[in-house]
Length: 51
Image 1: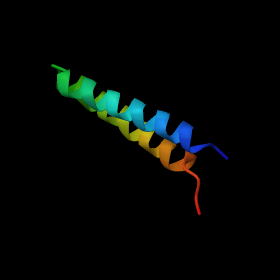
Image 2: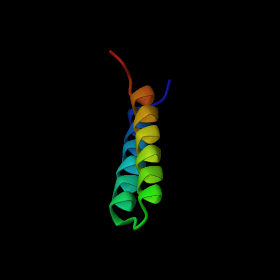
Image 3: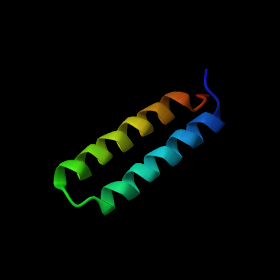
Image 4: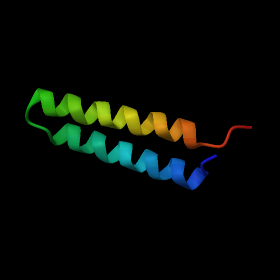
């Protein structure tokens, strides 16, 4: 099981991808960054400890 620290890191990566998506000029690049952000968030959900 992964730690909350790892989940936080994944959320940070997702936020960075969202920032890059906002700066992207081409729509295809924006969509790619947003897909990566979603993937990082899925990892974060899987990493967060469940009660």
